[in-house]
Image (cartoon, rainbow, N blue to C red):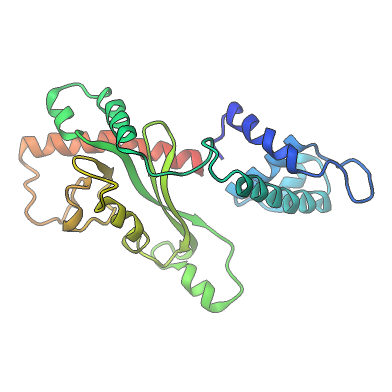
Length: 257
């Protein structure tokens, strides 16, 4: 799940408070809470079969199944009980926080033109498709089927900030939905007083951006975009700057998958 040791330890501290230490029979569990948390996180972010988890953790299929079910329920209790805990709460940043994020981004610039292009940028946006097991219901399977990728996916739109955190996410949407449809709640925020000028986000060329959001979502236009002079040196520099800084979102996606 992209958790470093400190983050894992923080989560484990809360996890072990909620996880029952003994079986209903009174016997100790085959895995301790650290191993159970690791098993659950590995299962959540990978497509490996249960047999592989049995080999990795050295326990029977029954123990893996039991630990997985109990572990997921425990994680749900942890996050439900402490919804506003700053360690994992997802919140839209205040204007002061946006300014701090912009300063972090501009600290990585090398000239005045680059600073001008990144003025007001406080985050990076991208879509993420996660492969899922085919639903048994035909209608549900049809909704989650992504024709472009020829498989079933759950779709997300995520906004990352320069401190490696997430400030907005819409998740588990059907794979057949377009990013533009998933992003509607985000578009509403960007056009509201919660995101005044000059604050904006960076995206890649594949991310849908209507004319209404041209000042709110910066991206390199598609190859077939009309009215873009790609031969212009200044335009080329601007596109190179956007591409350079939006690479941060790729690192964020890497940590998730």
